Image (cartoon, rainbow, N blue to C red):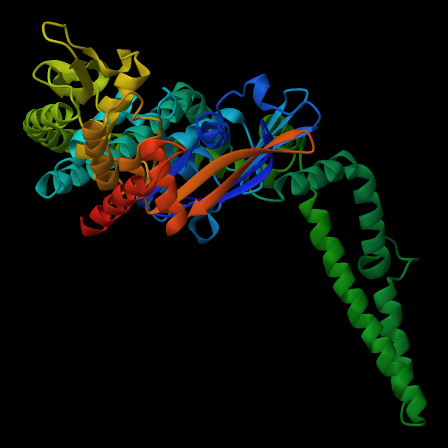
Length: 576
């Protein structure tokens, strides 16, 4: 519901605040008092263009702010609002502010977050239905017509529609996933052969981590084989073997030295320590000699072996150039290739599974959509009759109201009876209201009704019968009673009161019959102060409301009879 409205620098209004209540809020006042300014201000907060006449020339900025409580909004509508503008509704409240500067630039805020005008307008369609103008009228938007029809019937139909909705979402989700996988699969499939070639090239090389470093060391050894051999052989001769009679190997010299120390080791323990250290040196040189001998034999490689190693290194370097600067990187690339190829195979399995699941969902959707369509047509026939009776009560006895239910072909829709039909979350039906207001007149879409008074009357009749079904929480009727007499005014008043049982209603009226039905009666007046015309608003109750209804009955010169009549009308409202 609209709880609070603050208006600043708008037409005759310097600054004005209005609090609205649940049920029927009636706005009255003398002709020319500016009753419709409140409605125009609400229109502006919903994103309507503003006339230059509404803006005060001496003020920098026109500002309108409104507080809405969203308790009456359905969970589905709340989600749709958040889809339009992702925001947090603290305590189920929505604060809308619109600023319009002298430059005609407009700023729109929702919960203090800057939004575009189009977002504001879209959100406004969920909050308020304003009648008297063609803006914000859900009944003049064919997209809403199917909701009106469906909400007219609850019970099993609603359960079936909910079931359809759940399967529809599953169907959509699975189709989306399938398309995403297909798109990805087509890209990877085109390079599958190349991926297999790369995998084969790497796996055939049978690479090992650190292999390139080992091979480069061997090549370096082979290339310097002669020098290495010369040094190692000389070292081996000097340490162990000896290459002439004159040269005694170091190990032999050490052995003799140790033997000499052994003969005197018992004379002093320090000599014995020296002998033991010499023995350790002897063992160390023997170990080094063995290593030199082993190394000498190991490097005894020929030219053919060098060629093989260089060819192997060339292969490794070739793979490095293509797949990574290190063998470790190449092996990681190989793992990724395997995963990618495995993913291609997995995608094929997933696609087949999804296709089968989509087929199952489609069968369910086809069955449910046909059942919904059949039941929807029965609901529509009953609703047509009820609305025709309702319009007759509003002195539109020659009206014919028709609800057309059709299907639209769509290549991406559901396959039914050799055709593809467009499907939405509501089924395969496209619903639109048609009307003719005179005998012999051809029915035409409700959206083609051009008479403001006629539209408002039709809307009131439709809203009266569909008020429980209408999901727009706030309804505004701006002088819907224009040109209406007392008898029809009483009927309109009852219908507004009926609508107000399920919605918040704000009505600008000149009829006392409607004012008597108010849950809150607001009175608009204007006065002159300091050479300025100022508009004010006041909540009426008790005698003040009584006298205002008397004025509406007989004008400013009302008397006791008018007051008595007004009192009787108010009491009648209390008895209903």
